[in-house]
Image (cartoon, rainbow, N blue to C red; front, top):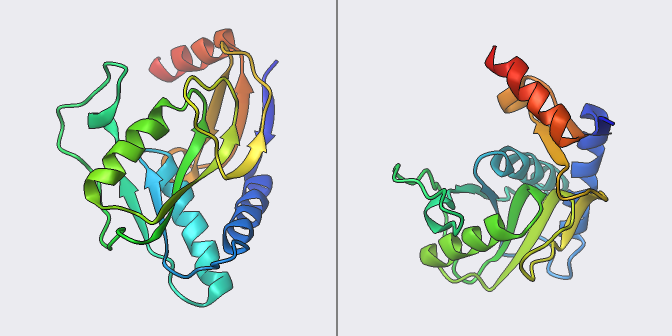
Length: 185
């Protein structure tokens, strides 16, 4: 059942399309900043900001947001925040980036964390993969690929920065368990 959703080339083209969609907004790159949700949303955000910078010829700032302290699922961390947003977000158009949107709970936590830093004029959501099954009324503004899944399926996102390759796979629960067992041995 394992299915490759995006390989390296498709991921690159998908991010390029997303960059153009964000810039096609009536405001273009005026007051635009990009913030990636840690862990895997941040490298996606960096790539997106880089692509937009290339198109616009002006730097699109990019930061990283640690939403762990704002989670509602008991996985809150007592570790220090890894948030690094070295620019002002108040009054800006913030494109919040994550690799996958599923229930919406991570994005809700990220919004809470973002609002503690400043008051953006508008926050838009960009995701590489939208797999549905929302538990909260959160919808992305920019989607790389929408995928029909069951709640038990897993989306495995590999990024060059962490895994040495770019790949997105749809896996069953059993396939995911097998991959984790191989990884642990």
